[in-house]
Image (cartoon, rainbow, N blue to C red; front, side):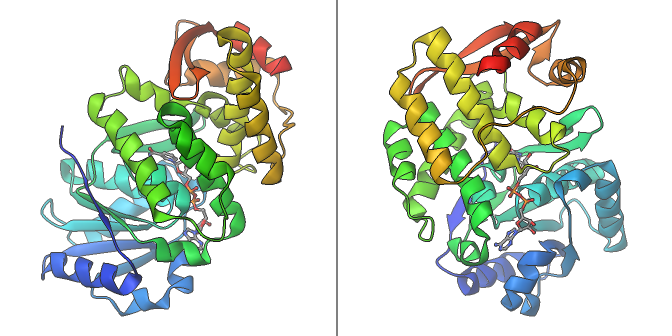
Length: 335
Ligand SMILES: NC(=O)c1ccc[n+]([C@@H]2O[C@H](COP(=O)([O-])OP(=O)(O)OC[C@H]3O[C@@H](n4cnc5c(N)ncnc54)[C@H](O)[C@@H]3O)[C@@H](O)[C@H]2O)c1
């Protein structure tokens, strides 16, 4: 499997110098999130051929991708050109999808600017967009050539976005590293340690390398996401990805306590952490049961009324359980 290089930069100046060097007069196009461009005006002075773009979660769809393709055609992008994405996970998914399909794939470099995209969305080569049938229902697998991490971006990231990112960080710990979980519980959200970011990236990339096309171990990365995606859609994207996954993880932990004898302390500690973050953990679904059922049966881990669901026997010890859709929906009533 092709691997992306992950590079770390102390500050934006170093990052920009590196990017300008690799472009080296080649044709390139850099899609940059509008909020990021406003907060970091230093980006405006680059030779990276910037195109400002604003994509919300409910616009992560084929219409947006079509506009991105048009921008690429207008700029005469070739397969040998380089596409950069500077933004969060919504950007990297949309630009990644467009870049992986444009002329059957152009070179892609991701520069994640949210904590969530630094530790998770920018890695592993999944590029998903939403349809009315659910989250990430259309997608490709294409590993970006490079992922460039610069924590300076986090200086301007709103607190709620930092909190969202902590959820994907702690997910990595739940799957592979109990110490990481403890470190996230004790974190000072104004000072995110780069070593924590590196640990989560290494965990994700290790899993992806063992199962790129998600036939076995990579499914663990969906921990908390089956229900998280339902919540994102049920709330009409009023609840962020990170917060929805947080509730999804809490429900999965509660079910794990019942089904897999997961220690109650693990569940309580996570619940207390979410309360500390001021997350609303008592989410009530708005949709009818049959609508939730339809959404769940469209989930990529579902087939023939069975959904493959991730539970924990212990921190660092996940397990895949085949659940009947109705049984899982029923579990949600008490979880
Ligand atoms: N492909 C994958 O493997 C994968 C994995 C996890 C999540 N995702 C996807 O990632 C998406 C969520 O990404 P996200 O949480 O990064 O949200 P996002 O991309 O929507 O960004 C959140 C907000 O932060 C702003 N922003 C970004 N960087 C900023 C900065 N440095 N300073 C100030 N504002 C900034 C953006 O403009 C946006 O308003 C979801 O669509 C989810 O499905 C994909």
